[in-house]
Length: 357
Image (tube, rainbow, N blue to C red; front, top):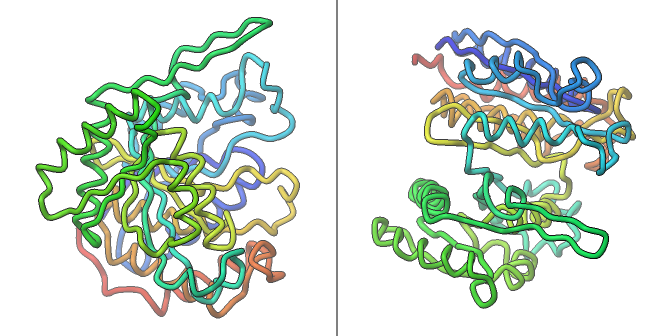
């Protein structure tokens, strides 16, 4: 397979973890006989410093012409003023809009060897393996905003079309897993949630092989900790998804393990770890690359149709999580280079036969 990939290192530890991810991509390409042409472009704070814009036109064009986009992180103290007219996160929001990605997939899988890193009792973590599908382009983040000296407002607005497309994506995903979908809303209070629930119920008629259940978001926040093994695929709106996925990261023991994929109608997607730019450790060579490497697995699976290679990368990450070396946030003392080298070495063992695509 030949593929064009756009790499956006971004700010903080972004350049370090994306460099690690590129090493894994190179190994996958060599083992599978693929050609991955990777080009790097600016986004976020470093783009503001260089061009005055958080998403330069050249970056946007490169992303739109790519088969997939891999992002490190954006932001940092240098650009943290919330009242600044131009901010790093604006680049990420603009990129999501330009790519037309509306469904953010965040897998949550507890590695048995790391269960002790979670604040939960280990018996509650057995078999935890679910995916949160977060709607990405609507809700309060994108609604009309007002502010005066005395009050402020953020409009939460959703259309049937916005809800239906992300719910269908979640149903399709559930069909490939355990055929169980949990839709999270606040339908006892919010009109947008009542629309969400009724739309989900209508769409469910097209997926009779998938069981749909509803959960109020406040109850869901509790149930994720009380019985996380119950869930398979969870779908919810933008704000709720943002909060619940950070909570779910606690189950795995570290944000540094968590990958994500932002998908639209086609194959092209935006892939990134869910951790931030971690400016306190940037440049020290100690960042955890496993979340970014796991995001590479999602890229291989969803954008490049290389499921065997994706499985091999995930198996290599699991091998390192079990056998070390581990980075600081997982209780070890290994640097980024050592962890990356261990994943590549494990990938040699887990590599599938050469794929043809």
